[in-house]
Length: 231
Image (cartoon, rainbow, N blue to C red; front, side, top):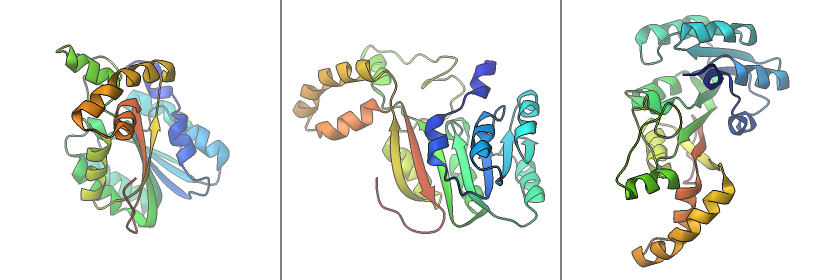
């Protein structure tokens, strides 16, 4: 991955995090750019980050309360988190472009939920495999992996909005809302116009088709404490 991959700030994620969070856990904290931006808004927050690439984690350390190097799917990493927390529970969990890289995201989400306060919030940014660009590739008989993006060759899991919601719910999270991150809106509108007649012919709700094809990523907010409703 390029250096810029680890240093970008996802402003959709940043805006989804309450400024009142007191104890934050970010999985895949990269070089600490999101932590730096958030703590500029909320300097009192204790912010714990986990990053699998040691060289990148070193760049994050100035901006976090604690930076841990490890794979979140390994027991040693969870133990390191528990040692830092010393019994304290998180009220904010951030998963920015992480879930798609996990072998068993169901287990990870369940284990992280057990480390949250009642009512603790999770914000996850998940690539949308239903995006029109992926569908167009398939219509041409292609599924080409790339260095970055929706078909990043390091992705192990692929999700639509509905299957991402299923993932969270099966991991005992209550989904509150989902927002679409749309890139290149002009091109998106052009392509969606071509699919509208097809949706009608196939008996697909045009509004649902537009929602599913337009989102490049989904930013999903979920709660650890009470039942939410389908977005």
